[in-house]
Structures are given as C-alpha cells and as structure tokens.
Length: 139
Image: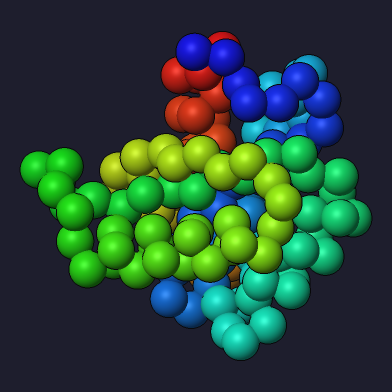
C-alpha cells in the first residue's frame, strides 16, 4: 500500500490523556524522529495546527490503542473521537496505526540508555515507533 502523500512530512501522534507525543518523518527519507510532545488540553488542536504549519506536515498518523487481544477499549474510542475532531479542524489526510505496547517499548529503551528522561520523552519515542511501523507497512 502506498503513502497518501508524495512530499512534505508525516506527523505521528501518540495520544494520551495528559500529553500527545509527536514524531516526524520526511516522506522522501522515511526516517522517523521524536519531535517532542504537546499538552492534551483545551489548546491541543491549535498546538498541533501550528506544529503542522511550521513543519510543513502533509499527513497525520494517529496511534490507535487496543488491548492485548486487539480489541477496542475506552481509550480506543477516546482516541478515535480525538482523531475525528482533529480531522474536522485540519485539512490533512489521517491514517490510523496500531500502537500495541509502543509506550512500554519506549520506556524500556530510554531506561536502557541509563540517562534521565521525562515522560514527554516516552511519548515522543512511542510516536516514533508508531510512525516507524506505519512507514514499514506502507512502503
């Protein structure tokens, strides 16, 4: 399956109730990198809109959380609702990507590095894994 866009950047979101992790990849190079996190507050859509404008984002990929059996949870529905609201506000194509255990993987990797890290670092690295998986499946 091909990507939705042929130029610009893809932004992946790891949507949490407190923060949203961000990761970026240029469509041409397809190398995802952590891009920080934004607060999941009343200004979140504006924060993401500004980020997309500044970084020339052409597509969004939103991590879709499910339980270990692959079934939807309350968090799955919350993320879908957030994604739907974001689609209404941003004129960008949106794709969904399973995000099974990406936050756990991110925390394990950061812990293994032996250096201090913040929760925002976990969120951004989890978004990077989401984007990496998406690119692997759609190239």
